[in-house]
Image 1 (spheres, one colour):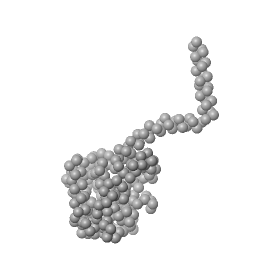
Image 2 (cartoon, helix red, strand yellow):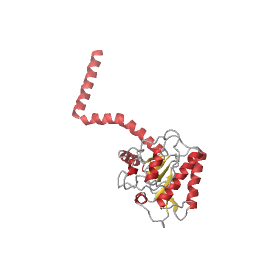
Image 3 (cartoon, helix red, strand yellow):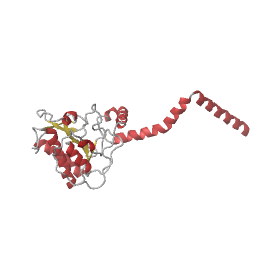
Image 4 (cartoon, one colour):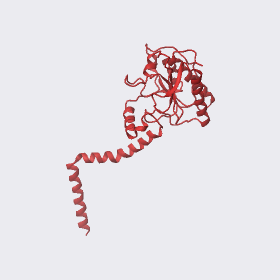
Length: 256
């Protein structure tokens, strides 16, 4: 009885080997499925955990687009690109102090671009939103609020239609100055090259992984993720960064 079972087991193995030999691609697909599917499920959940973006309503298709774009992303804290001969040296931001502590971590995906730790308190998020709204209300001839042309799911501060785009960054950046991400209260802003260099080097921001990557993507080199403020001191610096972004994008030195 034992011998018969062993013989049957051997026949089964031979049949499997023959099947693999006749269909080698099936083995490859089985291996990919065994290892790839769990990774894909985990990665898709990470994508959803980053909150709403223009890709989120597309579901799995949006995730695939995010994976594709992430393959073209690059590191986010170098500043050499702000020192090119063609970059303006004008500043709108007085040099802030160095930000305390390590930079927040950001998501594996470069779209949406979010921080994933060192989150602000509920009180600080409300304060940041109030600061954002106050500067919009105080500068009605320069800026207005509309749906963010980049995020497509949150309000964005953009140049008023009567204000001409003063430089290529404004054109390439779709005339959007800034927006706040509700899930983490980081902000995307566009600063002058000189100001971008300062805030990245002092730890207040990082470049978007796709910024300046291609002329087909509307993200200039100075498209930055400004980390969410954790206290009053950081809120004051973030507010100054927002005002500097408004000044650069509007070509104005008179931001209220």
